[in-house]
Length: 175
Image (tube, rainbow, N blue to C red; front, side, top):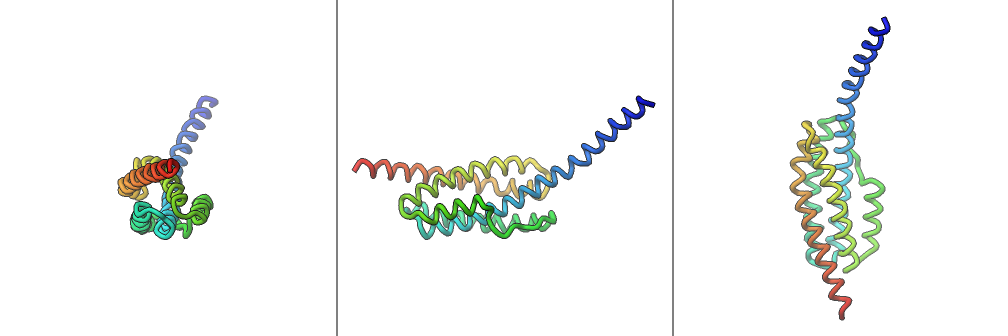
């Protein structure tokens, strides 16, 4: 009897783990798509801000690229959220709003420099999250796979802008 009870508990625990494992993956994908939507909304706003406050033509063009690409990505993410039955967020999260607020108080070269640094950090973080999600075989995973090349391109643009703004600061300090 004791052996049967232990075996029964072991099988029950295994079943519980396998049953709870599936929703956990779904929950992770739901969280990912919600975060992706918030990120897209934030990037659109920051892109618009860069077009207004950026000093260099590169910062303004990068802002335009962010606005365009993340608007398109958000349309796709919203469709995925609907498909998954996820309530889509309507605004960036608190941390993203804080970055926007910080950038909105800057202008000129200071804006370009901080904007570039923020975009490098943000896109590095996003790429890691999207690479993880891209391994999933669901709608969110497909969205992540399709969006990754754009995020990688944005990271390259942000890194170049960061180098350019550092060079400008460096050359400005010698005068």
